[in-house]
Length: 60
Image 1 (cartoon, rainbow, N blue to C red):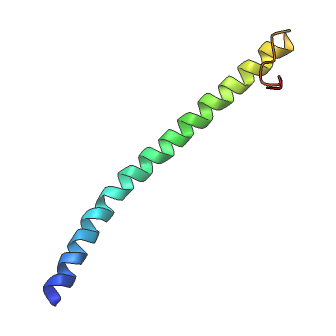
Image 2: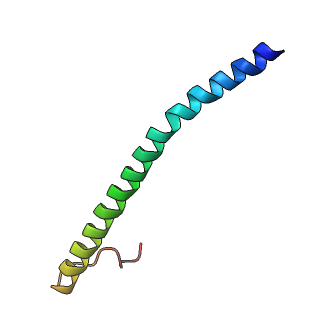
């Protein structure tokens, strides 16, 4: 019975050793996505204010 619990513990340790890099990657991906979205939002707003076509406001 102890061997089973030790096996589960080893599996959990190996799983948890993989999780921190995945967490860092997720943080970077969200950061990049937010940065790109903000830059696009500011660019689009400047384009519409100069008289560009506001295609986001059009109804379907």
